[in-house]
Length: 168
Image (cartoon, rainbow, N blue to C red):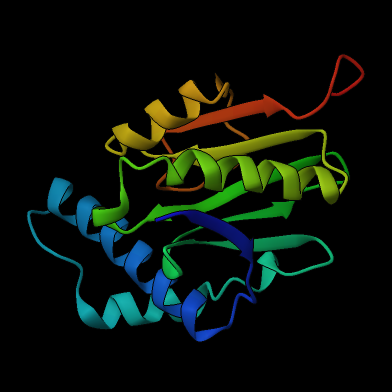
């Protein structure tokens, strides 16, 4: 079996199913950690509808879908925050696909997409309980930095230069 990563419209059925899986997992982890419960289904639907991913479409963004053996397995997305800075978001792999190199492939593909959009730096935020994500980003050369947003769920912020010494 082999991996492929390719751009995908944010509103395709494949993208919608992967967004639902991603959001369900991170939301459930948060609620189980802080409130001892799973996400309320009505809340899940409201949040999915509120963040459909339109900012992950060209010309200022890109959603990528990884497939393993041709089957949708995960996503990553980038969006320009300004002309030099892109944000990495929606990095996700279905649980059975983890540990096979797909996450690093998705992040690298997102970095390439950010460069193609003109970005010289990538930033991202994540939560403290997403230890696997934090380890992945550190392994791929991201370093912790100051907060660049006020997301109520962000606890760690990372950055990575995407170009040589002339970059920001």
